[in-house]
Image (cartoon, rainbow, N blue to C red; front, side, top):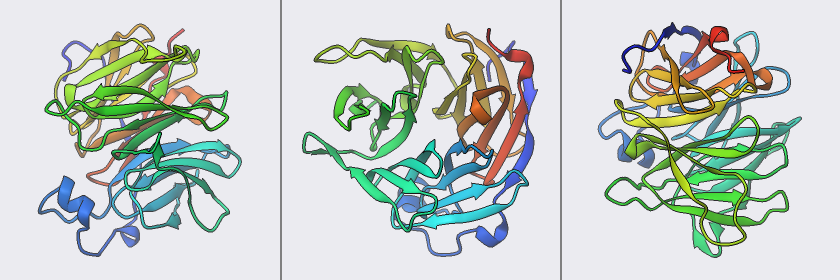
Length: 301
């Protein structure tokens, strides 16, 4: 925990109903990431739709949930995959990253997910982690696989609105959450295994790798997981396995920490509808919960 930072206490917004808990045997993902455990779910990667409903994914069991404004949970879709994040493309259209299958598209009223890409230049993805969609239609996504400080070969990709995929970085120890700055000038990447937030320009050079650097150095927990940026420039950071999230200014100063009353597996964050800087939702996977925090006093100007 960062001493001296103002503390915001989050409150419970919703919890996965027991009727939707997975009852089957642990699968390969659970055995690999949580040996000896039986997980009812592992919630990740939320987004809000135009109606204010919250969408999120259940990694090991290929489930996509919708939580409406009244707090009711619906299993919107289930498939044979490992979705890590979902982002809205507008009415009923979504993009997902899936650890097993790659980059996917999904329509809320459609019968199935569709594979958009599973490689770049005929080199298979290691295992995708997160994505962000810019107003231009450009898409950035992270490819973590099982990389770490002992194998810092995690990758970041850019996909143009025309569908061209380009490798941007390939030296990151577990690239995870990803988000664009409010003005679209920069891309933030959570390097979980080095406990850092990296920053690079959203304008790529004609060829080669762009310059990137450490924007924020964190400590504690496992490292940063999901990221989100408000319309006013606040960067929210889910600190994995620490039961907390951070708020940072547009120049990289930590301005507040948000504590959860229960659970340590903070996986992801999303600001309120339209990037509203007054409300932050935090997903906690250990208890399959969504927490909400009033952060209106920390809006960036």
